[in-house]
Length: 511
Image (cartoon, rainbow, N blue to C red):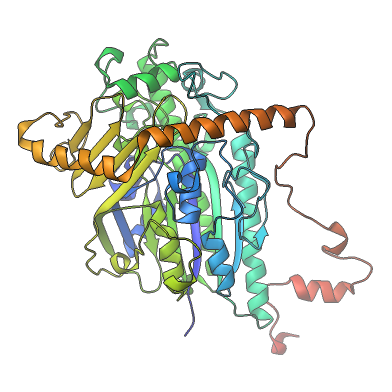
């Protein structure tokens, strides 16, 4: 039986609330909407850590970040951790990464046979936070409100340069798979194409900005003043300078308009990948997944960016379409650690092949429209702007958030989707709150995890200082290229090169 190809199109910092398929009233996302219209939309999908690198390492490994020490944006993703790219390659898939995955460390492929672009962020330990000085800003790379104030338009940015390269490289790799098919190679493939948009800076190309007017930009639904925030949110608010750098309504509107424009820009990249699959005749044999590493608060609750477990930050879009996937909506809570077992399931792999335990389950039963008794997502945050780990349990309609020095938080999303009312101290929820508190104590040793995080931070800061002084070589990925073997060269007959590159190839009757 022919196994389905797998193509993942990943956004960075895309909250599902800003997608048309999830009900946004004005955003223009026709390509994502079309996939949702013919596939399965997961309505309670979460990242496992609301920060780029940790979230992506959980996505790749199927393991929670505390299990693999993937704490922050400067945590090494160890080469010994198996990823879905390793498993799919072992199962006979041709695997490729085009775009961002924020790998930290000397292993910059983690099982992918092909990697066709560099990453957009540094691969070393430069961005290591310091939990022994959690209130100190690292101004070189911490978010701040200047990013919001500078929102607007530009003909080009480092982000548009990058995403245009990612699209081109991914399309070319897919066309090469079409050429392979024409030459008789029918191996299935897995392509992960990962874009940086709509991540801040909130700067859009004019053609995307002009898709919207200010009147089409909904403003934040629920905001809080600094003094009304829970303690962890207040620390985040202070860390990003939102507590003391005021924003005007016009600045907030401009940032949200640019964000919507960049969501539409990302949507166009989804369309380009779908078109390439159609061009090579593989669209009907490919399961396409659209998702993101985390969301963006974008002014909701007075917060920006991510780094918390509220819905706009922690939830991600998750849409699957392709062979065997039913059209519908899946209400069960799930998360990015579920993707590895899902991909292994698609590839007809077996659990016995897994080199390490995984924390997720296959979502293919839900994708096929079947019942799934599991309705749960687990989150962990161990990065900047906190001195202790922050944990989340989403089960059914309830979401519980715990950090040792802070009061617990419990929200009933069925009746309070904007998370306005913390019911952790409500007598009506006393039993549930107590059960969640006991579960946190069973699942995690917060003090030990804190000690582990601090130990790795000290180690990484020392190593980074040594690397800055010249010890070792940079880990930033440099895609290999041999121009002597490309296009028309002296060792290849001109007509042979033309035949090899032409796709679709000429039929015998046309020659």
